[in-house]
Image (cartoon, one colour):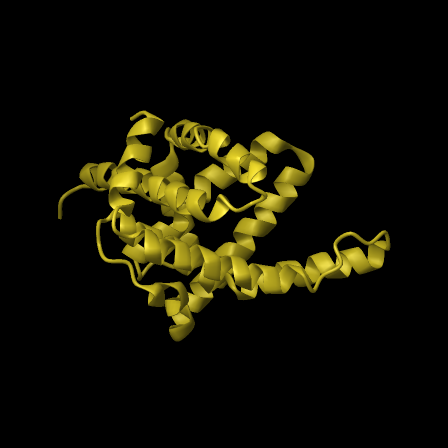
Length: 214
């Protein structure tokens, strides 16, 4: 499908759900700001910078359930279900879900950062390959983080270009984010997240249809 189809679908699913969507995005932004403003990432001291980066990575991993929950909220939107704010923190109430979130994001961010440090293309490939893992975790609560990543790799085979084109179609919107000093971000994020969720739903339906019955 063309990117415009997923974008139109996203806008249709977001109708009547913008309030909770904006609240979720703002909440995550505030939490992230509380972490990053306490770090010194502009220092010229290598030791301080390394410590700050390590603390930022650690905090991001520990707060992984919130990032997971954000994805779950917009998956719910894409399914045309009533999204609940509680999904944002739901993983904190389950040791299994919390562990899955931490393991996935620890591996995801580490792999992404290491690959992007050397070559951009492998980093992009890695990101696209495992971007739908949070959605898979929601629909398959019995899968471990690594099992979900393996399934994501299978589902994204032959479809990474589709997702890349979808991301590229939002370049104009992120230019608007820059022009508005970041203000437009709270509106663009639900739009993009729901579009990606819609792509996942299509990929999942196709994947399930190919599985042997029984």
